[in-house]
Picture 1 (cartoon, helix red, strand yellow):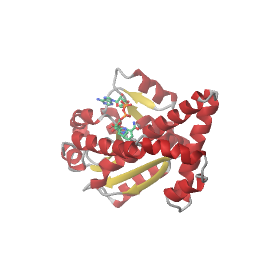
Picture 2 (cartoon, protein in one colour):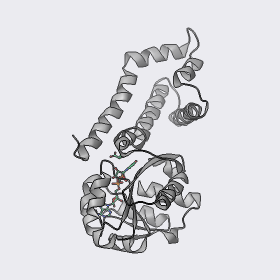
Picture 3 (cartoon, rainbow, N blue to C red):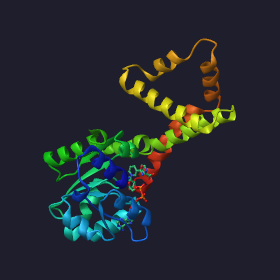
Picture 4 (cartoon, helix red, strand yellow):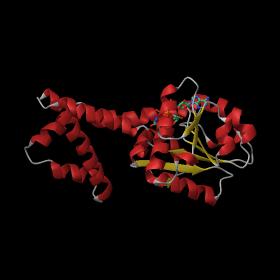
Length: 258
Ligand SMILES: NC(=O)C1=CN([C@@H]2O[C@H](COP(=O)(O)OP(=O)(O)OC[C@H]3O[C@@H](n4cnc5c(N)ncnc54)[C@H](O)[C@@H]3O)[C@@H](O)[C@H]2O)C=CC1
Ligand SMILES: O=C(O)[C@@H]1CCC=N1
């Protein structure tokens, strides 16, 4: 996620490679090379990052967050931390860093890499209006960004944080169906991806309910109606809604709420 954000900030012209520094696990050569390819200084300790940066993204796996916060606590005074870790609460982060640090929880998503992400954020107890503005500005440069209450964050994670994965599976499945019917795979992926993009655009911008948009595609007695019947028989809606529910529960499990 950090690489996607860095890439997005650079494409947006909001930051220069010389203005960023990234730390990676010493064994993680893939991340090392990815940040280096962006021209960003990359180190294998966290201290130089916290010492040099004013805004520090915490973008390690939730299980690694406690050890990283413990390590950087002595350096954290006066810094703004933006944590993208799922399931790690503001209370946990704030109590693990200097009381004079400021924390904001952010839930971005991976399309930030192409500046089509969507993010939400929640201000910690010490974060100022200026910190919220910095967060908003950074994340709006790579997509949409809005403030939410922390009680929404697990469900946001399950919907828009993880959501691109569900959509990628759908694109694969759409293409698989077309390939099964004899279409070349590259054409199938192009059409599937553009179909999702176009439908998403309409769902976002038309002001119409998704059900109305669905109806506009569904000619009486036609192919879409036949396809939709098959989706309903296969439990498509329940499968997708269930995925969001399961992901939310996993976030709560990680944060110790369940
Ligand atoms: N991948 C996604 O689409 C999204 C991920 N997130 C959050 O982002 C965080 C990172 O997830 P991913 O990027 O998917 O995982 P990842 O495994 O791709 O990245 C983790 C990064 O942490 C680094 N790392 C590991 N141990 C470290 C340590 N001790 N000190 C410094 N760096 C260390 C690794 O080198 C790697 O670059 C997670 O907390 C996740 O919940 C949030 C939204 C979306
Ligand atoms: O799978 C995960 O845990 C993270 C959180 C949201 C997207 N990826």
